[in-house]
Length: 57
Image (cartoon, rainbow, N blue to C red):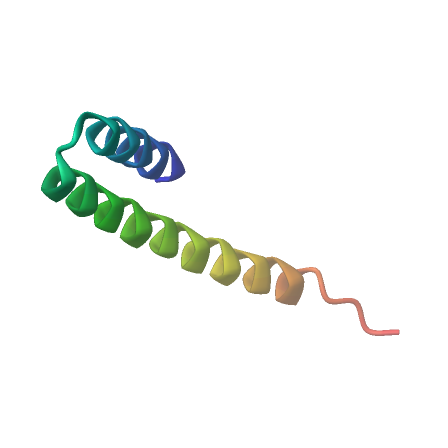
C-alpha cells in the first residue's frame, strides 16, 4: 500500500513539474488517501500486537 502511495506521489511531482496541475492534484489526493489507509492499518496491527503480547506481572 505504501508502495502505491509513493508511486502516486512521484507521479504527482512529475505532473506538477510539467504543468499538469489537474493530474498533479488528483494523484496527490490518491496518495494521501492511500497513505492514510496504510497508517490506520499500521496502528490497528500495532494495538493488536501490544494486546497479544501483554504480560501480567
